[in-house]
Image (cartoon, rainbow over all chains, first blue to last red; front, side):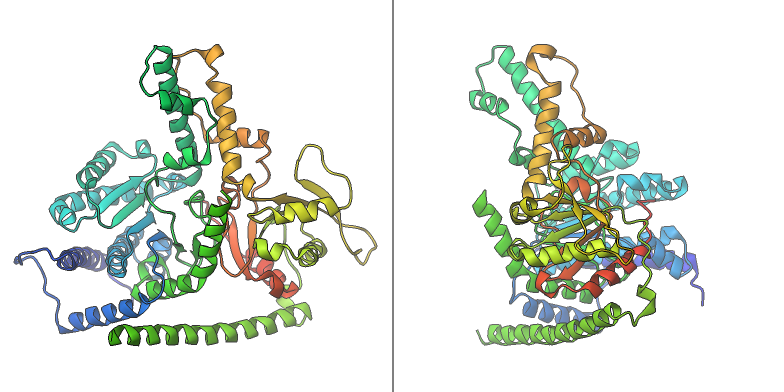
Length: 322
Length: 244
């Protein structure tokens, strides 16, 4: 039976709205914030409450072992999802966005502090222009939706970063993205980093450019006879170190990912966080991204817990050697 | 307190069940590898390795100390017909133990690679040559930092450029060139085999890992010829869009 694209689109959007509102409310409630119910808010039924309770029990059992602080997702499979269900590609991406919101809530409930997602690669600009255009429109729509709910996002203390070469985005998307980052910059809760448009080699080159530019400015100041920043000028004459580059990566201030999950069973990183994933547990579950649900996340954490002793041992060993 | 104890017991039980499932999966994998090695499974008999220009191998440093196993691995790769292998371990154990013992002359242009004669002859009596490159953690982030220094010193030379000049913006092509100059160049592996308890690239040079298929092979001590053939077969059937 072929699904009606329009109906799925509406369901996807409605689910997203409901999901976002429910998820943001549950986040706020967990943070002991008072949210007044309005007519727009849908109250979950008994079955929903049971689901929530079971989820909390599972998380409580899981939390007995080491829990990841930072999970990164390569959200692969939206187009295949749409193809298998004979729906529009754009709808596949929208359902993918709903999956992102759902997993954001699950990660929050598990105590994951940092969530990074690969939303759009610089290589993706090579795709069909109409697909790129619809993706840009989707991004603009979702960013504006988040801006509309900014009070709620700030109440749950969520910080949103956008990592990537934002100059490559169309102006409305770039402006909305920068505004979203500015509005949430002071938040200290869960950090959601959206990589778009991004690739790792571009990030490394960007970090090098920033280090060089910073040193050039200090040298200019030195030449102009400034006596300020004497300590800084000493640093300028030393070699560029790995730590210097670390400080200028988009991910500066975030710990390295504990787990990198690429959905759809694909085994490559596709130029994602190559610098930051030295000791990350790489996982490639078979489900397509829109199908990635709570049970898949639980399984991912269980596998991470089995890998944790080895990863931690290696991390400490390398730190010791440095 | 009691609740925590119950959760703890449940957690242990879950992991025990997973261990049993892993054991079962390990046994069935061993059987499959045996069947592949015995040439019972016909689909694995002809491997199409045209797309595999370079094979990367990450080995856990603790396991890399077992030089005989590493050499056995190289022998298998040579037998299969792999032309270029980039061997990596984070602590540089392979560089220290394997490089001095390699036969044949070193290539002057490349610091770490050597031509290696196959350890056995083919049925026609000729030797296959395979290039083996040994890498370590210093070829990863440190090499990128070295390349950054090269770019900085070449383009921000105080005496020649002065101050207040145009801010130079380096590109990925500039970086690739700089990496080659500091000895951090080399082909990007099409496939990376990870030998260790966990699927983790352990700092394999980032610039060479962009579109590499990464496969976990398990601990080196459990390595099997059949599992290499299986992975190569799966690789030959992969398709990449490269972002398109």
